[in-house]
Amino acid sequence: MTKERDDQNPTNDGLSIEEQKKKAAAEAKAKALELAKQRKAEKEAANPEPASEPELTKEELKKKAAAEAKAKALELAKQRKAEKEAANSEPASEPELTKEELKKKAAAEAKAKALELAKQRMAEKEAANSEPASEPELTKEELKKKAAAEAKAKALELAKQRMAEKEADAASTPDSSLEETDDLAKQKALAAAKAKAAAAAKAKAAAAAKAKMLRDAGESDTTETAEAGEDEKAKAAAKAKAAAAAKAKAAAAAKAKALRDAGGGEAAETAGAGDDEKAKAIAAAKAKAAAAAKARAAANAKNAAEEPAEPEKPSPNQPFLDTYVKVIKEQLGPHVLEDAYINKLSKDVPTLVAKPESYYKIADLLKHNEALHFDYLSEMHGTDFETHFEVYNHFYSYENRQSVALKVKIDRNSATTHSITPLWEGANWPERETYDLLGIIFEGHPNLTRIMMPDDWVGHPLRKDYEPHDVEV
Image 1 (spheres, rainbow, N blue to C red):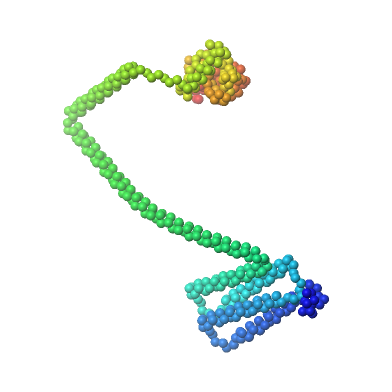
Image 2: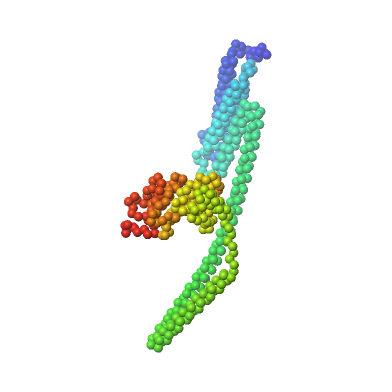
């Protein structure tokens, strides 16, 4: 095989691959130079312009420019064909190229084709713009047509360039690349179709919304006009009525004045007698209404006494209260509680009233007894009932999901009880607040000082007998 190639190209004897490539490139360059000279000679022969050529009309100039552009395009086509033949005229004895060399070669050819197309576009653009200076100015419509034709030509040229690049890429890639390119083109076409359909739907929706808005605007204008008319009528009627009332009132006043002026003392006495009669009638009506109300109240009381009272339903928390009382009496004795009841005014909470000396013991039992285990203090405050003070605590058991209230009544003169802060840390500040505002002393508190008022404040502001030390306060 190698011997046959050497026989066909005897001039390549002894040359390396690089030297053969350089030789082929030099020959292609010489051919391209020769073709360029040939094109230049043909162009000079095709464009011999006589010096005495008469001025051409507008139509003749257009035809001439079109012919020149056609000739240039033909020349460029010939040039591309010649260069293609020169590029393909490689020595038969050149060895087969590797995959990388083939890729580089295909890329170089594609680049050369793209450059050639760019030159062709430039030449055609120059040919299209090479119009005689004496050409008359075009109208607006003609300029629009001309611009449209140029844009169309550019688009066509661009399409040709893309087609050429696509062919060059296809030549340098396997068949799978062509399939991928076709798929990509199909996807682009499909996306363009979808976008077009979406735009059409959007335009249709906008048109429908605009039409609806116009209809609504028309209806609302009509409604507003009708309502405005009705409002104006109502205002006019009200004004007329007010004017009539004012007129009648003025007439009555004038008539009364005339009677007073004419009748003198007799009229005054008559008017006074009339006022007395009115007052008597009003008093009689009031007395009658009071008697009727008294009779109704008596009848209601009689009926209530005759009807038997409905038995009060027991509270659902009564069993819990009974359990608390039972545990306290078993552990601390039967006399430690002053009272125990269900507070209907506070969500039926079981309420225990401790004796002052048993207050701390009951609180300690409520927290540490396994059956009770009230481990959370949710509220604590003091109240002045004028006859005595009262401290109120509300406890909650997270284990049993139950609540209980513990009260203790304190003498106003001594105003002393035991602190439950050692049992519930949350009682610290509430007990300080109760001391600050009511003056109740909590024995065993770790820091019983004022918490709201200044330390030098005189008295306790929430006592019912409190008198401000500073009269300006």
